Length: 111
Length: 113
Image 1 (cartoon, each protein chain N blue to C red):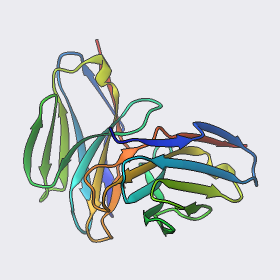
Image 2 (cartoon, rainbow over the protein chains, first blue to last red):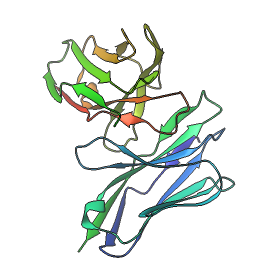
Image 3 (cartoon, each protein chain N blue to C red):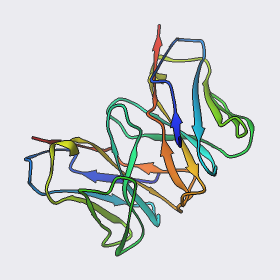
Image 4 (cartoon, rainbow over the protein chains, first blue to last red):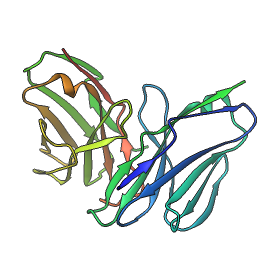
């Protein structure tokens, strides 16, 4: 069916890296966004991708493969403050550019 | 920095009562949205608007009305609040329907008892 899937939880260690996966199935595709949401706060935009490949934005990098319906958000040199939920959202171009959100992946960064 | 402000921050309502959530943006954006967030669900679109005095239904509009009296203001109205409407509600704005970036308000935690 149509939707955006993300693992519910992910754990990693300070100073290392974490990869947050997102798979999607939509009739059309018009871009994919990543948001960070800290506990009790609003989602904050991190990145937008529409073309295949890796987009490096420093602490955050984003990969997209449209043929596989797959994206990941890569966080490097993790800090404790990176602990948050990371939301994947896909623009479905076949349904009026509706934005479909995944449930979010709760990343816990341990010392 | 673009700003979206919501009021109230939290609200306790009784079943069957009327609730109004307000949203104000200073981004000069045409599009405004109301989402609800529940554990185990992604953000779900309730209503949206792309011009003043006009609103559109999102994916889960039942039990909700919306009002856009001006470009800056967008309200969500629960005429008869129900237990199932307990959730966190987020308002957001963007400069076009397929905008890359949504700017979210801080959210309103609504508890219906």
